[in-house]
Length: 539
Image 1 (cartoon, rainbow, N blue to C red):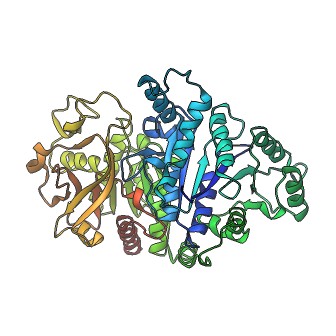
Image 2 (cartoon, one colour):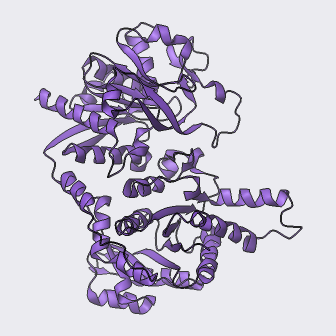
């Protein structure tokens, strides 16, 4: 029998309150007291995974080492805890139903009528308990997506109710994250929406053990007492989560509110070591007290939604703190970038990162931006599609192959320097079929990337279908344009560099997925440093 303790995080009143950040912050506090902690996310939508979702719909799709396409909250979990997640850490309703239906087709239910209760709820419970069966974790935090009262969330709430009963009082608990809105006309914080949300949760048979209250203004003692009384929680279990400058402030705020102590008392646990969060506070100090400012252009086509490139933006925060510089990320929409506005958009930029993406829209703007920074010796970083566009730009504007393109954009192109991977050519289903997860890459001995990584071989996460077309290797890689990272298994070109340039690197993989507070990614750290040097020389 596992000794793992379970914490369930639910949300009320409205969505997007930050359950993932609260879960990650609590996990960080518990981890700092030497508990082994992981977090899992259960999403109530019917997609099997977020891999087929448009970034405008759901933000970025985060990829784990084992190739799972997951919710972006798993990125927060890894960035806060510096612990790798996996397929088991993110489960959707689509995956739950898919599994139950497959079992029914195999006859595993022995002719029973398959129903939401008990079959769907049993499947949810099995998935929740899966990580605990490894005996690897002292505490598992489970975030339930959506908002209490949503129809699609009901099976999850029922599964949680059953688990709390089965696991026992000291082994499971619920944290309910809710909103305390401020009515400016009345100049008052209002508790009624939270009272109704807690009531809805109790109607499903779950009592909130802790209330975490999102608020724009400090909660008074009277207000906390009112919430405790009418929501049936202890006074000390009413936790204020006030708006902060950065998500990285939240663990400190939760420590000040004693959220970790309330949780440990509820689970009958004693800290193995007092938490000091020294490293975390050092990071925050450097982040909040930069010695310089730089502007980096993020060239992409999903820039209207901040979460579309969430991991890239967070990686810049980590790398900026490491360099003691404030990185101002300037959104540049590639679809609207052209000859007429190129100088205006890029004139004040100290470097550009050309972002990943899919499809033809906006690629010509990306190519134009790469040409500009290549010729003007401005630091360039290309990720996935960004690396592919760098190859196409060089072929067109430096080597004279004007028809160079990707078969993703122009299937019948005469010069397909970027082509569909051989392993992808017979694939029909789109979900979960790309080249995914961690793959090895061997670095050239005299390359910039080898100096940056200080290793001969690296492992990075991928999410792509197209690659550099090996047939054009001898035509393209001339004049100091060099492949400096190769996958030893397939020969796939993973990294390209341009010599005689301050910093020009394109990578087929996604380094942003591996950047954390305690381990900023070396490529981002080096790139930010190059942008800082460019900024200094410019002055």
